Amino acid sequence: MNKMVKVLIISVVLLIIVLGGLKYYYELNTRPVSSDGEQKSVKVEIQSGSTTSDIAKILKENNLIRDKNVFRIVSRIKGTEGKLKAGFYEFDSSMTPEEILNKLVVGGKDGETIKFTIPEGFTIEEIAEKLANENIINKDKFIDLTYDIEKFSKEYKFLNDIPEKMNMEGYLYPNTYQIYKDSTEYEIIKRMLDEFNNKYNEIIKNKEIPLDLSVYELITLASLVEREAKVDKDRNLVSSVIYNRLKIDMPLQIDATIQYALENRKEKLTYDDLEVDSIYNTYKNKGLPVGPICSPGIESINASLNPENTDYIFYVLKKDGSGEHFFTDDYNEFLKVKNGK
Image 1 (cartoon, rainbow, N blue to C red):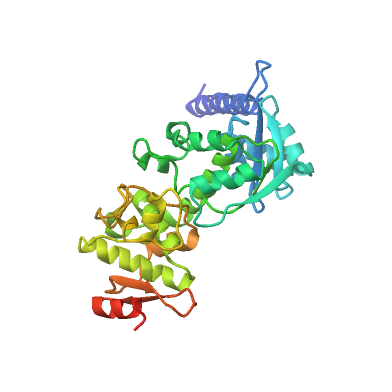
Image 2: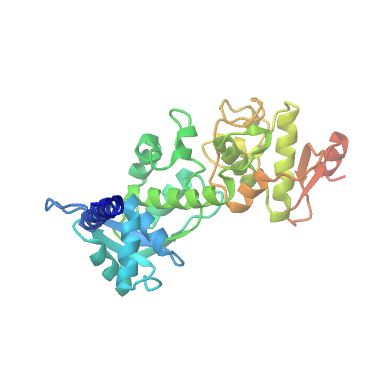
């Protein structure tokens, strides 16, 4: 047997081994995740515009498929690319990738979901109160879960920045949500964290944050902008004032932090209110407060990442009813506007 024949035989044998291995891998990963008869039901939302790759990622994260790439291969073989429908689905872990794809082609459930809206600037307390009033959650259970950082931080790494004994204030993203009627408090919090994670990946991740703030500090600053700015055009300017004060180690003196520290918000603060004994009191404590004071929206987060380049260190609400603020670096000028002169 000459050398070329030996090489050919070896090549054929290796090819058979490789093909056999690929066949075994494919067959293994087209089996259900639960092959022992145990079924775990999982509810997922497939958002409009999701690609097969996006869907495979969601299914893998929810432990409904064994391998994302194999799922995509099955989709190509079945010719379901571009035919998978957005919607709400309930799968179980005994389903094969093919069975999941069949369900995705047909479409999700109808008539079994509800909507709720969380406005920008709401605190966790306000979110829980609103959802409880709409008979969606148990308020106490919801709030308790927001302190259980460990339960969520493995999936949402940004939560690891939260100091001990603090809750998820600032991370329950304000938006309109559609959920299953029987969604648990855990599932609702997870849905809101998913939305924050989307924004995090879109505009925060791998971005340079001014003053080298952590993500937690950035969200804290964004929450101040959210509560202070009344009109969109002021957000980047309010952000610049906060950064400028931080740079010169000047107390932020932000009324919104006092409102957060008080048991009940007031229409107008008194000088006694400014003396409230609280870690959130930015009149008494320099630097950012210990954590966010509300859930900021995308505009406030963007403004905190991109403050206007100014020398302003003062701002005051104009008295013309426009909702706009007057900005300056001159204290006397600030006092004149504040006093209506």
